[in-house]
Length: 227
Image (cartoon, rainbow, N blue to C red; front, side, top):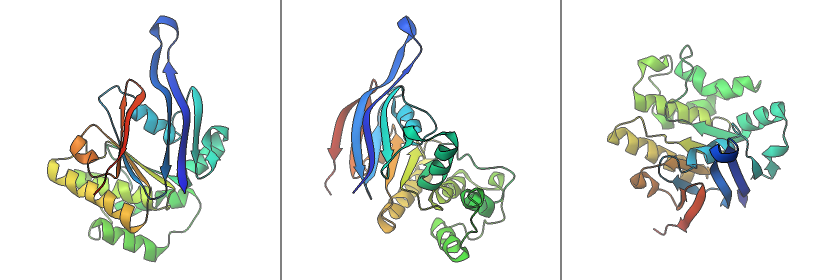
């Protein structure tokens, strides 16, 4: 089952002699439950791609279809609701709300959606994240690895169709990086959660089932890893 279809996606900035083509006619699809790494050097277009997939930027042309919904057809309000319910975003710098506790940050997407958190499910998620003793802590009382765990939990709390991680280990040391990648892999396997990770680190990319390479806004390689 295709969870994501990207069709002829292009993104340009500027005009005339100053025009920059960040994405150039990119097309691919992702099946439900896949763990995909998108790699490329700085300026290759990979982060632009992720922002468009996440609905936080719009393409110049082309389509992004998530769970049979073409997000380019949604107005601003409908897109915000769709993004909150169907897309989980994990950023390099965590993007936690500094005045909210761990538990409040985790459950924020549910509360914004007007839904009451299921205490049992939340507790199970918190246990898997290893945050049982940190629920009342504020983000500035946590290590970088712990903050990223909260960010992952927040991204998963709505059981999204797609989880997007933008350089999720870029601000962490090697040990915490391994733990975060292992955690993403765990949720991918245990929950059949579709994960797309953007990274410049080929070692991290090797943990994925499939690697898509981007250079100069174009896909240069798309290979499924075996074993």
